[in-house]
Image 1 (cartoon, one colour):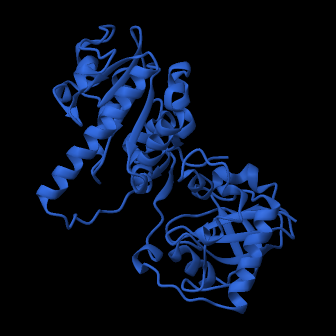
Image 2 (spheres, one colour):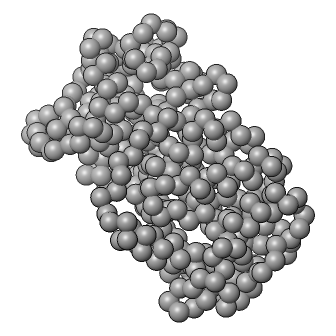
Image 3 (cartoon, rainbow, N blue to C red):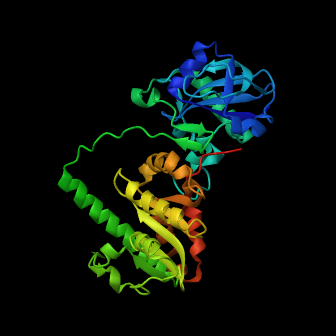
Length: 367
């Protein structure tokens, strides 16, 4: 028997139950992986909005294709006959983070949020021991329920990931509520944190022996009394191998690392909920130079990953050639700071590719 991830929102879970709880389905692109699921396997049902396990389904058939409407927002045509063998409710469902000390998928992570990648697409095969632990935790929660409050808006939210025949996999983000912070507090906090992260990226790039560039309009800034322009290997001019429009876009990217005349990495630092400016600059760069080979990164607070993921997978960015989600990755603040602290003086012996070890893919899971 194998254990598989089966993702639901609260809305799709209730639709599943309303239709008899006898059929579960996956997106068409998951057809190949679905063929590895067989009768007797368990589907572990996970609520994406709440990050909780709510039930276990036993597979009763091989995969088959059916477009009969069950779910309002998507077809999920690759289907299985199932039996609901264990069921909780949103209040008694098991938070995945309650199991993090027991599950292998939380071990040896490159960054604190890397585990979330496993829960961005289903089906996905669990390690057998992890599957057993989750199933036992669900059974224990049925026998000895513990009620926990939950965000009803997150539970009832509509799916954000869709398939478009013209574009592929995209997201349609929901509107954000406005911040309750005062404008002054928000601006001051953003400026301080933004400059700190820029300075760290400039310093680590310089320590790697690379040339470093800061956005032209940030050139006169400093952090902790140290001017950006005083950092070793600071560049005041960029290579001119591109046309004027491309160069003007590149000049405004927050931080660049350069090996000689080659740009090897570009970083946009986005501290607030509005991340459009950085993404648009990267999108402009790809549009003007589709054959460019630069590693792109969006650096933001750890808790902004879902926001970044949903925004970068909008149709506008998904239809670029190459798609922006394929070549732009997310770096959490904490991972960047921890990695710099752990590396210490060894940085001078490392290559720029080390940054990949803490970067998280923003590409939707595909078979």
